[in-house]
Length: 356
Ligand SMILES: Cc1cc2nc3c(=O)[nH]c(=O)nc-3n(C[C@H](O)[C@H](O)[C@H](O)COP(=O)(O)O)c2cc1C
Image (cartoon, rainbow, N blue to C red; front, top):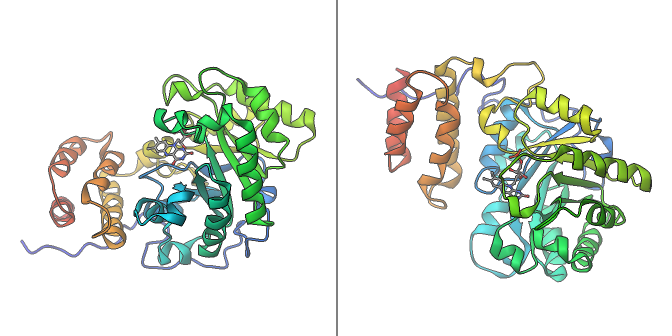
């Protein structure tokens, strides 16, 4: 049978081929000279920064299928971006022209690194590229990184953290600077640490309700997140507080907002269970027929190939197959076949056959 050319799935409201209205009036700042965080209503949503997940391809797809109020990049090493020929930082900072054309929500670059001077050089480039805010990663728990006093390691080095924030604020001028962090490194020191951060005039502060030693294990502590909201209010700070940890459904978002009083809710792994989580019309991914899910996967594969072929290995896209094949009869079998593929072409052929 001749291979049929795949078309963009019918389900997404906007296919990747039909460009959405760029004048869409939903909080996309017209210029970076705006603290967009202050314009968002309580209960706003953020797609968490996730390395090897929230790249330019994935963000665009989520934007088309049901956008959060704010997007964040994968974490970008500022030192590498400025000084190194290695490709990772540049790839993490990469904005595909189609993403920029479709973008209807503020897009924040998340950076990490311990050299204030590198922040001063990296940030203007990121703002120039199209990001409208800078988030500083003070939460990555990787042992090597923490030992060097980077990311979550900064929790135990507030003076260094303060210097980095100041460098970012100077480099951003009026574009907003935010921080994403945890409750502590080996033990919780929520108030001491959050109190320090809240004295730094940040536009937003994301609290992932775990300590670094937990990695992603155990439940996120939303009572601690609630205590940061209270502290913010006691201090009279205007920093928007965003809660993060274990949000998997719209019900979770509503429940945790009510429980904690946070301004915003950040979803990480929950997007793997429902890529439509941010839709406002109530549609859920699990309700879609398998064919729609497979078409979405096909689109993902096609876009991954368009943007990254020759730059990133094919295998990276395999980690996404589970999203689309979970929870329906025959899905697992399809996934197993896809896991054995070694190229975009092989995988595309399997999907084309499946869709016939
Ligand atoms: C695959 C993966 C990559 C991640 N990469 C980053 C990152 O680049 N920057 C960051 O601040 N957090 C990163 N995180 C942590 C998430 O942003 C989030 O804080 C964490 O997953 C907890 O939220 P969740 O329970 O909603 O997943 C990553 C998490 C995952 C699962």
